[in-house]
Length: 534
Image (cartoon, rainbow, N blue to C red; front, top):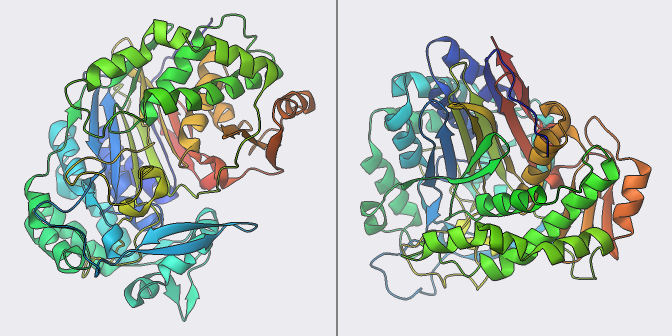
């Protein structure tokens, strides 16, 4: 297998889900900031520019490395309720149906759906460990944007419309997301002076005050947050999962997210098969199809049994799952899917995947990749702070065994998967994605297009996408800048008894925001933006 070589002539390169994040990141890089400063600043700005995708009271993951040894930061969320007894009847936890056009799906919201957010302390730990500029300088662009307002982008409008029942759930939320009674629409300003005040408190180090404010609304009896939940906060800094592809070392976040583990497994599976002609579009997509389907099957038996905190055996389980012998044991399934396709099965619901991502590589070769989310939000504004709290305790994907069954204090599992590729002590590729279950399939394809097919990074992001779930094939007939060849489409459809075809690029497939050391690609499916500054 021949892999693309990293180009010479490093630049400051940024990709994110909105132009405000990219602009502020580039500004900080020009003023002496490094990739970590720029990425954190971009995340704080995204709390204003993408308020239906992420929030200071959501959660996320980061991978940093290149000129320093790679590290993975876990600041997603924990199950609340330390010190509480059984759940009482007053818990504010309700189902709400969201419309996806031809179908609806139920999500759970309310104050009892809010998990313990690790987002703020996690970003602060990352900055403290690796940032170069003062924290105030890093967060200042977000403070100014929250006061002055960010224009709602056209890419956010479908998500705003889907989430309308949640955004109108409470008077405070409705006030944030409507103007004269109508939902905010394209070119309306999202403005939140209270959010600017929250950012100022973060700069001042007033975390105790912030946590106390949370407890007034999201504590018992209507919510499950307790002071003990915040007393026990820790931000794990882990060795990333690493896999080798040619001369490249890929660093991915380990559990409590299973996203990195699944992407690593899928890439190892693809790399085993030297007979794949990556120059042939049909062969390439058949290989992606088989890898996605095999990875989903392997997850059921090899990853889902992992507990959120893992225990003493977690590292050995991870090592076993990614071992060459275990990956090889799935060759039969891979080859069968590649040759014959899928049997029938239930169709995946069209979950929005309210997640966003920032990728930065600076001209010195340091890379930072951060993915954050707020779920669908719980519908309640944190008092005085002008933003919504998460609903991680109300998302089906995070609770396969039922709601409120996971032990309090344990970490929730996610699909988020920020990734760095490293070579010769420098970051040469940084990427990540939003999109719920499509995170892993989107990243697998973009990395495959770039590393195996030698496509430029923008073409790798723009190429038509597929996703395989429970016997159903989902495919884009046309990506943002390319059309799937008819023969490729024909071969894919012949391998699935059920399919859903999207005639145009669609937000369903998530958004991969990626940078190399010279070029960036923001995914047009959700209004992504990139910039490179020499």
